[in-house]
Image (cartoon, rainbow, N blue to C red; front, top):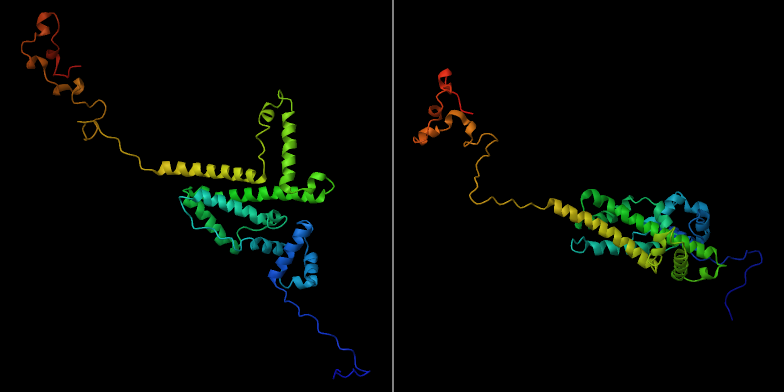
Length: 317
């Protein structure tokens, strides 16, 4: 028999204590925002829905997050957590950039419409600067000139975001068009059917009007999105590597040309100053003096005027 006495008639029924509330924090708000994003997508994400997910009033969110824009930025910055880039390795920089791109695409797939969240964020937030600095280090380790190393990060990020955005758009269409049989399959299966349909379409075009589309109909589209992504990254990396190779050639020391045997290392003689030139005038020897037996042409033609009697001696032409 219980020793507890019944309550007196005039006493109010005591309320049972409810569960303790978990304090509201930024981390909880961001997690709830991801849950809402996965359920309704980027366009329908709102502060009101995030508050409902947490079971609090909307006004309670604003004590931690000033606006939806700030919430999106927090969601964007969360992506960089536990994303460690390796130390730059000049021998493996291509592989390191390739791994970075694949991991970045994986981050975009971690939540629905994450590419749109990423493209709405500011990449130069203080929290993201260490990540950006290490990424630029990979390009500099590969020998890229500074003017290209600074732009390469933007090129890679733009490709990753754009590719992931295209994938998210197709995924949204699949979810919104469930009445089509092909949209009820996975994204890769759906792309396979789209690819085959496009290939047949290009094959059936009139070749006299579209010679290149018909000729390349079987090779324009790769089989999977993974293959398409890897090909795009490889094109970018090889393009960047060509700039690094050009820079290495332009900065390499050039070997000095070997001088011919017996060549003089003295100062060059200007044109027309050849000591052996007959224009050197009085310095030229009188060939008659070097060869006394040589005939004097003046004696063979007595009628010829003797120019040396007309004035002082002049150089012979």
